[in-house]
Image (tube, rainbow, N blue to C red; front, top):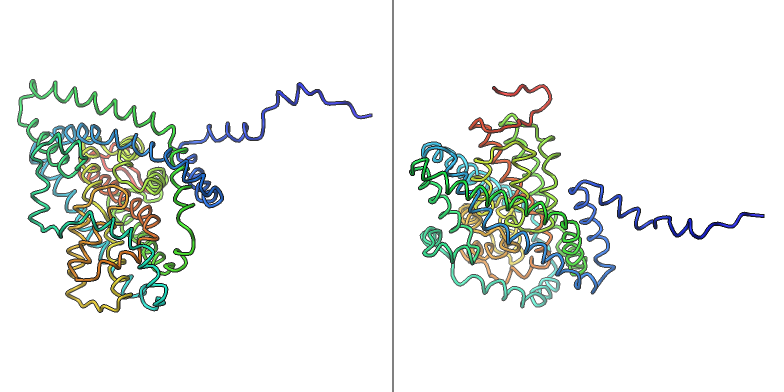
Length: 444
């Protein structure tokens, strides 16, 4: 006769769910984020309305990160500028950074144009499908277009960088103005005597350190926020629109992947850095940028990983990364190039060489002036379309898959910021822990 089981023993045994949860908690943060992202993508459509109900958890997580960004950017950028030591070094680092960003963005939009002109994602769309999509997304398009009152000129962009009221710029999270003010503040500190400069830098260092601690605390809930965000996107996304625009999506994302696996590793190797080890140490940031679709929300984590795991000095990282989160938009530039050609092809508009050159110049400037927030690529696309006289209603053709493209281009944008920071740090001799390929000897 079988011996009866002691019910007390069963009651003390942890459930399968508890065991799995305990294992998840012991995993590294980037592994938890990856699992949360995959689970959200798979379970989102199954959860349906529930996924929409839990989205505020993800929104709250993003708000917590954005709350940190303004004081972190100001403190780190002022410290980074002042710590560069002298105006000649500041000018040298600034020229390297801006030069890298301009070249990378111009190459990105050119690659996007070449891919779209070669693969023709907009040719062959059914007229009924086009008409239905223009009708279905007309309301969304109008909402997006309300954010563009007129096409800004280069003069307008330059004037908008200068804040009349720095505190208003902080309240409105206008990062171009915040960065401009912070750099000038840091330059002014370098001119002061060390006795007068030290108390200000000590205070800002305390603010910067406190924000980094706050980032680590907020990141403890990152997997839950990422799951809520991705589940809501997955539930709302649907696969019908994706199938209709599959060729366009594949061309856009494929071009971003090619750029990431070609240009960035080349830049890293020119810096004496192993691309394999770089991505191994950095992919947590890529996943996080993909999940949040926001360069600004990713900035706190990016600063932490770039300094602690990649060995970039705080002076260089604090200058290059906040600037890159606002002006370096390689993924956005590719998106604009592919999307412009796609919309033109759908409407049967032929683009000549002059038009393509105009796209490169306009998309580069529009990308540089874009804020690092979700969905901004849709707004900057209107600038390019307006410049070429392409009907703005064409945005309705791409808005259905905007979110998945936004996630991808944000990951490309953020990666480009850090690749630039590694290169600048290497050329300045401030890569504290060089990431070397096997057999490469560190430069002394």
